[in-house]
Image 1 (cartoon, helix red, strand yellow):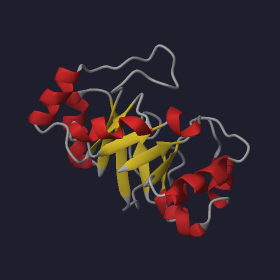
Image 2: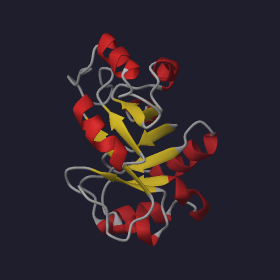
Image 3: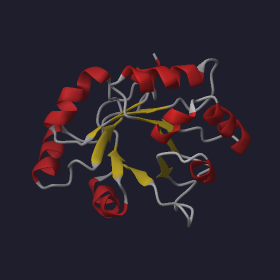
Image 4: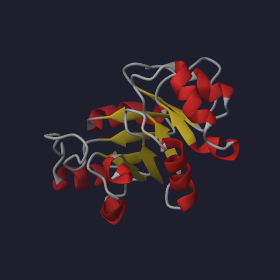
Length: 177
């Protein structure tokens, strides 16, 4: 699975770019991560995306919009640690340690583990795990199909991610260059 995460701020032509990424064929889902956006701003972005593609969107904030527009999923975070009571779709969560993966993987459809590589979009944000630690996590079943690599992931690193038995990757910086 390959997921693209939006930039935290809106930009001109963003909805069109999201549609292009989804139609391109190598991106499965788009995570709409706009931590400072209002409900109305996020709703306006969703409404610019054709209804037949909205089932490939995941929200990090304003989770009730996922219910309203029948989106694919919601992503839990410190701002939104629990899903709405009536939510029955996909749930994902960010993890930053193997212990968090062990804790959250059974409760979610998928989790991300980061940072795997040095970040492209965040200066000074370096990989948190050695290659040996990642191989050990793979061998012990911590990394599996439900764990996606995040942090410094580019489209040209997807094979390396696959070799470590991650279920896929979440890409931010490389998708918006």
